[in-house]
Amino acid sequence: MIDTIRPVLEWLAASPLGRFMNGAPWAFPAAEVLHFMGLSLLLGALIVVDLRLLGIGQRVPMRATHALLPLAVLGFAVNLVTGVAFLASDPLRYLANPAFIAKMALVGLAGLNLLWFRVVLYAPIAEDRYSGALAAQGRVVAVLSLAIWIAVIASGRLMPYFDRSLAG
Amino acid sequence: MRIDDVLDALENLGIAHLIQESTWAYPLLLTIHSIGLAMLAGTSLVIGIRTLGAFGSVPVRGLSSYVPIGIAGFALNALSGALLFTADAHRFYDSGYFLSKLALVFVGAYAGWRLSRLLFVHTEWPDGGPIAPMRLRLLAGLSVGAWLAAIATGRLIAYGS
Image 1 (cartoon, chains in turn cyan, yellow):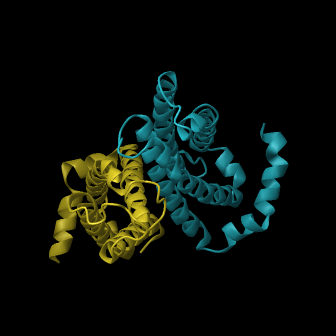
Image 2 (cartoon, rainbow over the protein chains, first blue to last red):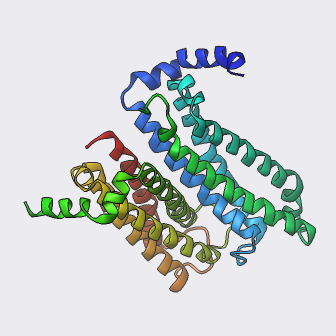
Image 3 (cartoon, each protein chain N blue to C red):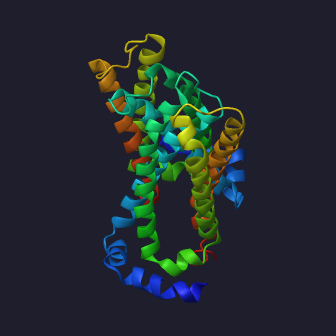
């Protein structure tokens, strides 16, 4: 796999973004600060949406919790941009890090789970047709969402400890 | 040099030695600290941003359900933070970023707590109309600003003083 994406990674490392991340001494810490702020926005919004699917916080109509989804999208967008910037600083080093691979796989799973929510649950909730079997699916989606994102945070935070170029 | 004696004593606690000598205790505490951050800052940002006027379709008083999650995140991070501190007391105490973060956490906790009392116990903005009363908006701005700044300074501790 690495051979097929190697040209992309080399292009990324040589791109203005890659040079910026390695050039300005404050670029990496600044991106990290933004990455943690993005994480808080994303999780803050998802805590409300997912717990509501689990039946917690029923004084907020389920449909109204969807107003928070743009906040989650904003948090994710900030973290996508800063995440690509980290990757651009040293692509092969990230690719060799098992915690990074696990984190990317988990983000992919979160994406599939979101797709499930969007395709099966979103419209019925918006149109007040949400009940019975759908609510059971909603609880599964919510538990998966919270569990996956917590695992994303954990694998991300543990990345420095799986970095082979730092070990030993 | 009394403070040095205190820092030495903390670094020599049994629990501090355990953390220093274990390969995984410190990374696991950092991981727990990140999850607590998501719970505390996440819920504080949602309540603060709502009070500042966004997502008007969300009933304000319904957000009281998320206060316990913020408190649980705070407790998790007070504990994990205290343990991280004992393992490396001198380095943290000598870091301007760490001391700034601690001050910002107190500001954020005060503002967030006052805001939730006024919103959910005293119901000073019961209808959640277009604009919250001035002092609620001030507390919300203070809470959002302090938590974002606490995240920033906390992250920068790793980059020296």
